[in-house]
Amino acid sequence: MAPEKSTIDRIDSPLAPPSVPPPSVTPPSVPVPAVVAQAVRAVHRVSPRAAGRLAADLWFRLPPRASAQRRARHQPPGGEPFTLQWAGGSVSGRRFGSKGAPTAYLVHGWGGWWQQLGAFVPPLLEADFQVVAFDGPSHGDSGPGRFGPRSTSLVELAESLSAVVEAHGPAEVVVTHSVGGAATLHAHELGLQPGRLVLVAPPVAMTPILRWFAGGLGLGGDAVRHLLTRAEDRVGWPLDHFDAVAMTRRRSGQPPLLLVHDRDDVETPARGSQSLAEVWPAAELLLTEGLGHRRVLWDPEVVERAVAFATGRGTAGSDEEPAASTLRVSPRGR
Image (cartoon, rainbow, N blue to C red; front, side, top):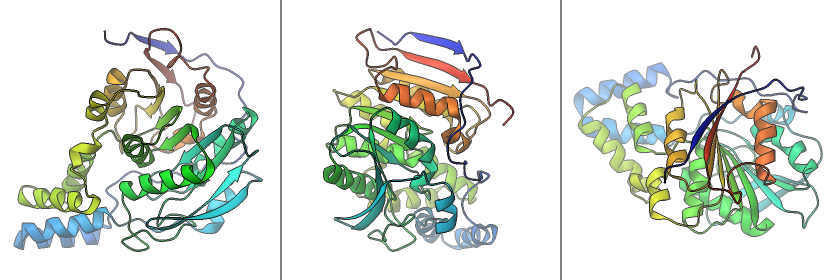
């Protein structure tokens, strides 16, 4: 039977702001300088195949890393740094709380850094979790991935997450942002067994995003096909493998899931999370308004709801029939 849907308008509550300030917001756009996009279009007029290859190289190229000073400004106090080796290099991160406590993992998105999820650390510690956060390959303080210091893939992020979990213990909950959610679902598909998942602004399929990227570069036809083929060669999987809805339908034993998505997110549209909530066996959907793709990570009510879910106080995963509920959160002048 399809999950019952409900809509709840948020009631104002006196929540304290996060203990660390949110990073500045970057306006969403195709992440390629205009002059580079013009060059790709010029190549496209001569050789769509070459333009597709060039577009794929640009797709896997990361934006410049945020400075250490900027990341430090948003880092919660305390914790112990760590660096560990994985099959593709080394990753660095920080562990907070008492060893032996249930472990919550934080996974950032493409071009991100773990401190972007810093608002979740204090309340998770107060809820008696230990918290493990890390920078993915070629991100933050971590070493380069297999393809160099400005390049990686969601597969590498998934593999590094699995290595971090192996080193620090079972994942009671994993809280993710953006592509970190897709990477975590891939890791889950390959054997990671989280007790609960909180996916904030996840992309639920890769092919539509690659097509959006190609469209932003002015590419079409053969160039797009070459882009998609080269992307599959790079990650080593068919792009359809990363379709979260299809994955859910072919796999049983899914953990309780909280999906958080802003209606105004233009980088990863909320309709993807809505589609995933419809098929995930124990899912809860939190829709916000006016927070976009990144500010949603720092909204006090979003953080409170996510931590409540992590402790088992959310709807999904209870003894009752699983339901995908929708809660609208106002930005309160943000």
